[in-house]
Length: 463
Image (cartoon, rainbow, N blue to C red; front, side, top):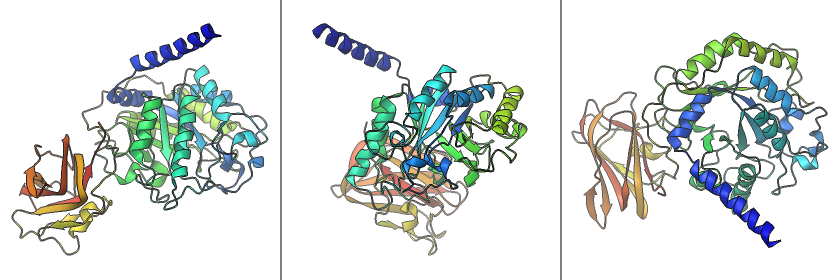
């Protein structure tokens, strides 16, 4: 028994050491993700068995009853299209889990199917040499995980569920999060603390990318709360194929909806020509990975019209591997903005664009300086003396106006200057050694027109 225990311990240690030795830099992982080029989104969950993508949160697990479920068919269809990975909806907004979770009874093991769909999916896709990604919704209406309703047990459930998904199904290339900081979910990165979840994911699988599908409100020039910038085309989010400089993902369903509908077998799917020439090819040229949703039906199979379209895509397009190297960009911002909604002050500004608009968490609104002010300034009061080591500044006004500026902080009633040089571009991110302050101020010394600030962020990232 002792020998067996020692062997198990040695195996665990060897596995951990191997994982540590193979750990990649975030930059390498982002390049690897873009190099994958094209994959399959698989919206399959309890909404499949209803007539609405947003399922009834009280729907009985009894309705989840596929009779021919075969993830091998999904994987073969993905392979035929020359896709390189899949991504399965492990839990959608109504909270039904399609894996063998210990966190809730509202899961597939209490359905007539009684098998772990995530396990079957992961094994099937790996058997075809395809990477495995997982989708997970933070919004969970069954378990009452809703805005302004979040309790400590909700955060614990999220952590436990993600721990299961990242511990029991082998290597997960990326975790795609939904229903978090979205206009329609309104669950903030403070209510469910983003940095805690981000670091949990990385502690279990350091090579797993974490991306948030709802990062659209943030500027396209920087990564806020995601490793990969995402664009949901159906929600009006379209990447700039000419100017994008970030690792990106664009998603679209091959049908009219994300989850299967009765009309799907009879209605035409999007054409292979459109998928190849308007999506895969131009997006790959813009550092963007394209993920096409193909929804299995209630039997658990992909309809023949979709399978046929995927084969046609595979005949028209070949995956040629690595794309161009990514250009330089800043690391993601992952911690809470301690300047958000805090009292602000400024030099004379526009009455319709007051100082409070520069830290209202709305990147479409701005503080505008009055043109008569020769040296404009804006400042924010923190909640007591707070540590910070990162500042982000996003210019407003539609064009770049700010040329030179200083950032100062009030420490023990003494204004001190941060040792940072002004940066160009609409979004300016400064990282530096941690300091403490009660107030932070930006003074603009040179500009081409009356300056505007859309958002001024202050963060304390864990090193």
